[in-house]
Image (cartoon, rainbow, N blue to C red; front, top):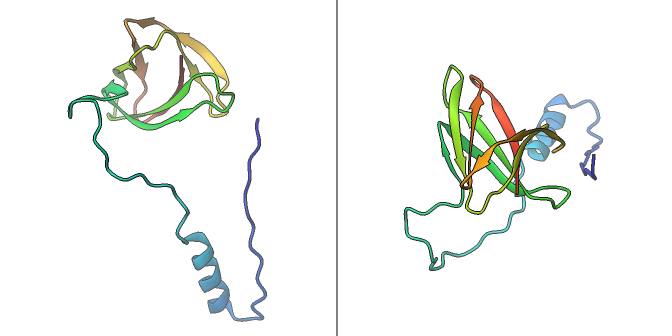
Length: 129
């Protein structure tokens, strides 16, 4: 779902396997372009956070592909299932989603917090509004 882009590199190397391996390594491990911002004075205290999660790590925060809410990815911290609390200021609704960001099940949100159980050694994707 949605547009995806990728590049495939093709190179003629004759029969030199070492040269082909070197070209492949340079292609796969090249520096990726990125945007950076300089340090600036913020408004939040040093202990403030946009997203807070207890018993899980937030591995990604992004705008949903359909521009309807934010997508959060959570990773498990434990070798067993754990109760997780996620807090996002102003959050009024949330759903678990699949990797293509299709809603699977609604989550109960109360006071900008949601509670759920995250399986052992697992990753979960959420859509929040």
